[in-house]
Image (cartoon, rainbow, N blue to C red; front, side, top):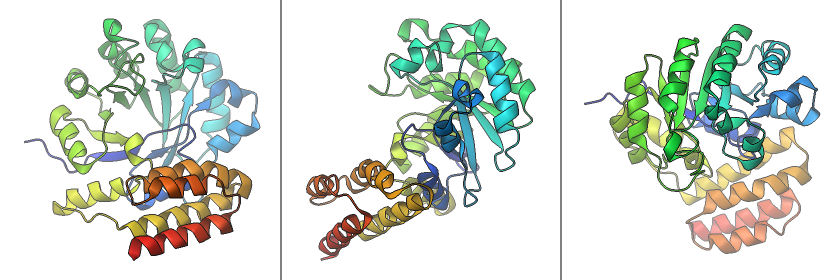
Length: 320
């Protein structure tokens, strides 16, 4: 029987999702580590203002870390030394070799790096020599089914001193479709001596139990399973402590949406927050009564006041 306790539960870096406010919320519910949206080393080297915003970590965060992507070892080294090393509030640096987005892939970055093990060798050596922070590399099974080389990539990481790896059990070609292959995560875990974190298709406490039992991974990274459901961290932690957990009520979900709005407004202007929170609201209320109607209403509103009034009304309906 595989021991479930002492497994780290992390929040994956998610573009357009894991901003400061959402990371704070996930920490509140028990995320052991969170990661920023991935930041381009090219943009970091050129002092891009938008990238500085991605790298921003609040004093309210205790477990936040940074993920970067790129393909030029010199720029990677420069970005780490100038932008990452001075940050005393992060312990871990994550490097992305898993992003399937066409724009990133065409640039030879993200999951495209898996096609070039020699470059992976150079990059991982550069990562380790450039910083004293813990370094992880996040990657996929391979570019497609005919070129699954995750063991080779994992071995390169291990040989070059990477502290731990995170494996998303899909190929680049799959993007986020089909099922994550947990058996391949198990194979990587058995092949390496450094920790392996499992990622892919964890939406419930049962999924968490099953992925750990199946793979014996050292931890689990939640991605889409946490979108609109930061409570999943709480459920997993409660389950690990007591063997059961208490689901949040619909009212608590609405309260949490309001709290995330208020947190977001501490860091961004209202127009931006109202726009960005629309998708979060949709994720949070999915499956609740009349959720599609409420989501459509939220998408038309322009101010925090209007949205909070609507959420209050909705909360009354849910409680009634």
